[in-house]
Structure formats: C-alpha cells, structure tokens
Length: 411
Image 1 (cartoon, rainbow, N blue to C red):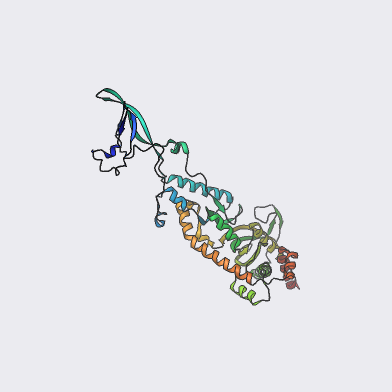
Image 2: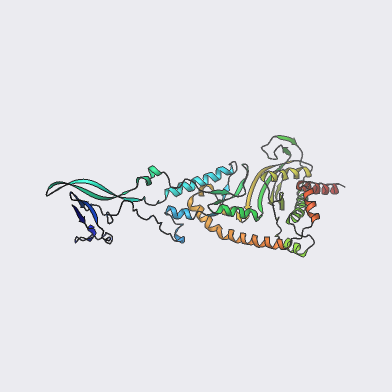
C-alpha cells in the first residue's frame, strides 16, 4: 500500500515572509511506514531531485563598476585582456618580472569573492516519535558539494596567459610591455608594426672591455683629453646618415619617387620586414668627459648592440669607451609614464593600465595598417637595390662611413 504526499508548499500553512514562491505540485511515493517532515531550515526547494543543482550563471557586472574593489573574481578575470607596461629594474631577468606579475595577479584573483559552491539535495533518514511510537522519517536538506570546497579543489585560478613584448636583458632597465589573455595576440601585431624604441645610453671614455660594458674584463685603457663635443656630434651625424640610407633600402621604396620623399618628410619610413638593427635618430644629451649620455631611437635592436655602438664611437674618436647604463624610455606608444613600478604590480593597477592604454593601442594598430598599405602601394624597389642590400653588412656601413669622415678631417 502506497500513500501519496503532496508538496508542503501547497499546504494551508503560510510560508515565511522571506521564502520564495511555492513550487509546482508533484507526487512522490513512499512506503506507508515513512512520512515526510518539513525541514527546520529555510528550504524552498527541498523536494527537488538530487540530480538538479542550482544554476551557476555569473552575475553580470557593469563595465564601469568592474574596476572598483571589491570585485567578483570571474568578472575581474574577464577584464584581464590587453597590453600594459611595467618598469623593469636593472639586475632582474625579464622572465622573473613576467612570472612575478602572473603570481601577483593569481593571488589577487583568488582573494576576491568566488562563485558559491554548487548545492545538492540530500534526503537524510531520521527517527521521530509519533502516535504509533517511533517512526522512520526522511528530511530533505540542501548541502554544498564537497568537491567544490576550497580545501578539496584548491584555488580557482592557477594559471594566466602572460606574454612578453620586446625583452630587456638583465643589465638593462626601462619600459617593458606585457600582454595578458587575448593581449598576447596584440603583441604580435605590435611587432609587425615595426615601431621605434627610444633609449638613454650612458658611456664612459678611457677604457675598453670584452663585453662593451663597464663590468666586463678590461682589455685596453686610453686617453680621452682630445675628445670634444663637436667631434662626438660629427660621429653621431655620420652614424645617423648611414642608418637612414639603410632604412630606405629596407623599406623597399623607390628612392627617386615623390612618394619616398613624402614619407621621409612625414617620418613614416619603416622596414617592410625584419631587418638588421637600424638607428633612426641619435643625439648627445650630456657631455662631461669622460662621461657622456646619448639618446638613441632605433628599430630591431638589442641592448648589446647599443653597447657595441658606444664601443665603436670610442674607436672612431681614436680612444675607447664602455657602456655604463642602458635604459629604455619608450617602446612604441608606451612611455615611462605608462610603466608600472614594482609597488603597483597588482590586479587593480594592471586593470587600470589596460583600460587606459587600450584606445592608444587600437589607434596605433590602425595607423600602422594604413601605413603598410600605403607603402605597399609605393613599392618600387628595384632588383639592384635588393642585391646591394644583401651584399652590404649593416655594421660595415656604420664604421666605414665614420672612418672616412675621420680621414677627411685629418687630411
């Protein structure tokens, strides 16, 4: 014999004022020796089958509210897509900087409000006293899924996709661009745009080392009393002129065309593909012998290449020189004002930096795409230029031009 039990939500007893609306009626069958008691806890769906669990749909967060602490962890995670810049200190490998930022982001994400654990309905047996003595009862209870407990599952966020742009070596410092999430794809677009970078390079006359830096093994010591600022600036002018010719050749445009002249006037000539290091601008900022400081704007360079430039300048001035410091002050559209210091490598600061830099990144990529189409339309490079480009080494262009200028001055 079976008895039919209607859902208590349809009974005459009123529900508490804070309860949800009554559920639809459905019939459950139990043996005659069992009865169902309403649980003491506030459960409005206690008769739901155990396989049915609450929806895990995340609550949408308004964009203007998503950057205000405290945040909901999934909403904060969705904002971590884009580019931002940090200031890399000297003496630290760039991989340690990237890994440290990833660790800080994961720590902050896991400290935010996390989604509630899934719930399940459990029917717990019990014994109660009735008119016929003790009776076996079933109590419906909603319990969290233990598999969702943080002690069983661990942290919700264990990995973030963080990519690096143009890297800096251990001894260098300055602007270091990173991409997180979908921003790693933007790093590739920024590289293909061939944007220039600016450095402040410090040099010291009077000695030469095996690695062109002041910390290397000294292999030569020379005098430097004969060096003046005018002589230094003449060498810099020769270097810039030689590199400008190399830039035009790698841009694959006709040197005699009106289009090449217009691009040169606008300062928009860029290589169409990967090229050797090219210096587009170099000037002396400070000159207090034996120390001097240069500002270098370049493409496709390495920090070791810039140290070698200081060494070559010393040789051209009939002396020797070493590089004491390399600092990147601009990487494309990112400047020192956009770079986050180590004390600001946290979730909130990085979210703000991504939001601030995104319009500039989109505008620059659109500008680079339009410039590329424009230069492809002006492509008039001849076969003779291509053969000349392959036969001439970039370093020979620099040193040969500078030495010829010195010889003319001596004669």
